[in-house]
Length: 344
Ligand code: DGY
Image (cartoon, rainbow, N blue to C red; front, side, top):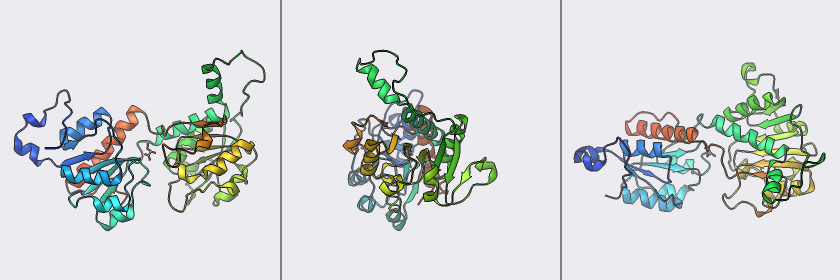
């Protein structure tokens, strides 16, 4: 049998279980190493095929592994590129593809739909963690945190001076949020505590109890001139690719700050880098990049770019909750129930 059992305290290993019980459990392929608690539950309830070395596989390799293992379910992650070729290569017995992410841009949903594959994601549980990272980026970019940190680490700090590393005060500034879903609203709640005025653009205007005095702009283009800080919270699709381009950057107030915790592809890197170099954008706080992990090299040397390696949901609590949600969805499909977080 090709699955690997990772022993877990207090659990019965497949070897100790009656053979018919083990054989009755469906095979679940985990494409990446997941938090211990998630792998423990997966291994308790399924014949789980783990990836203890956390190797990144291509989409067609994932399909080949699923075929070899006889998987009926696949728990994949944001970096797994499951394009139409990979979906087509998945064996017919795979019934559900549960992604350990809220974003689904790495999966060809159309191809999955066409072959009757249930695709699920993990909404809600990463809202707060992602909003926290957006605020970390906002404050870090506005207050030049990475420049200060590098100064100390380089042993180049010669002491306090009245004009050293002066940044931008965020209180009283206007934060424009494009995409006012769960994460956008959570960012707004945090930014209000810092005294920021909230503007937002969304397909639909929010009800007053959710809007909480924020200014609505039906047209995101019309909002750009009032965004001292612009934070992006909409999905990556073919339509939103490079949405923030040179022309839209040109509509922002001079010295605006850009925050991106959504997906790298929604900004045009070359245009953002040019604007950061020219000071047209004062700073950017970025957690996501096009072609991760091979981000545009132009960012690396920019002192006013505060960069994180896609940490939005990276807390133990959040990653456990994401894994449990993915497993809840797989459990539902295996039991013939509708998946709670079906996206395709
Ligand atoms: C998501 O869930 O889409 C995140 O980007 C991965 O943490």
